[in-house]
Image (tube, rainbow, N blue to C red; front, side, top):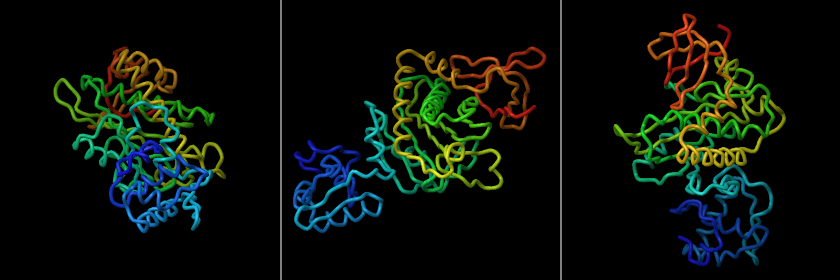
Length: 344
């Protein structure tokens, strides 16, 4: 652990253990462009100089540009930080969400990792982010392609004092947070397909998976998993006509900064989440309607048993239910299901 002097100088991202290099990284970041001696790091962290050297090398392998000098010590340069918790944390303006970040190079699923942390008592606002997932999951049990360097695979933990029926609105809030973050790219024909798929030119760029643990009248925890395609260019044959990425829709020759985008999503989500907790679903529904590409269109809704209904999406209720007016004039209020906006 850091000594008191280091704690005053450092941004502590997560509690260190073993050879986790993040404790050294926080010290170097706050002294950026200035050298920090190996002896100082050794004393602050209560580890050997050899352990300091090993942690520095681990950071270099992750892409951090650290200059070493025999006489001066170590210096983190002013170059762009690689995708990771420090780069994401420095872009945050939140009070709660993202103040406890766990970053992994690879996990099976960020939702699965965060479920375990939630069961162990992790606080609200804990975020798990991975560079890749081996078993990324989407809605309805579908797999989600989550290759390294390609996207934002992130899960947020909430412990709201809300009724379980409010879960749908939290999902809508997450979709709004992502869509708002994408505005900077001026992407054409971008919007939310009910309830939470984000499309660009009718192709999916982001999916959101919400899971919860609840009793009859209260929520224990909610996990919101976000999968956003950022730097993909080549998609498997079976989904190439259904999926897209920020890069594919803007500049194929450019790699986009995932850290800034992840920070923006977290910042946006905390704002809209706090409004929901304080004022109810109204602000969420209002913003969702601004970004939606569903209302007013003919839709085909599929249920899990294979049945479907066809009609016009006319409105969204305060609890997030979609209102579909069938051709016979009957209104259906839909809480869950898969809709298609493609030509019917």
